[in-house]
Length: 212
Image 1 (cartoon, rainbow, N blue to C red):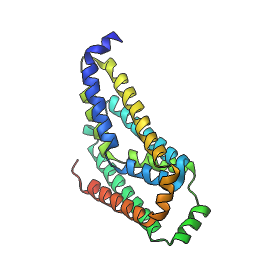
Image 2: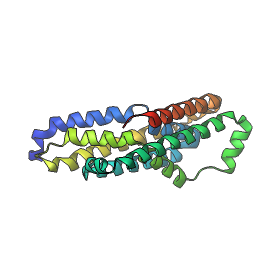
Image 3: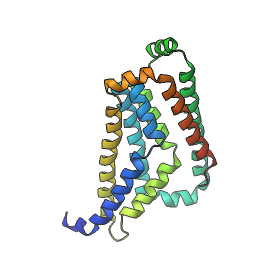
Image 4: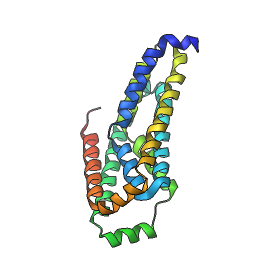
């Protein structure tokens, strides 16, 4: 433990950057909030677990030297960017379709075909794995919090980030699944779904047109 103390300020800066990047509104946070409101605690936690798994996957790849792989296979990142943008546009279409349903039709649809927890988990995983910004965030964090002369610091950096991610993602899911929020959702369902559709569409468009 004592050999980590000299690097603690650097780790704190990296963890602070991770918190800011994680709580900032993005496709993953918006999806967790909307799912927790519309599908309840279990659904929100399942989707949050998928997001966390995707984040952990990119963390492991960044630690394993993903930056060198990106330089060698730049086209793969371009394909990932296109896939991520199209996936976000598909989520926007689904949200808009839900917003256009009548209240009775929407409730009936939810009763007949509620998405399984597995599907919600995979949705969260897909959102994070197809987001190139998540890759670059982890590459930045690894370079920010891991000195070249101290590779043993990296597991501490990643472990701390994953603990923070667990608290943040699961916290959002729990917060927005409480009963008063559910009642508010029923009253403002169309507006919420329309806002989600607009957000996902904007995020997808920005991702498709962004320069990597």
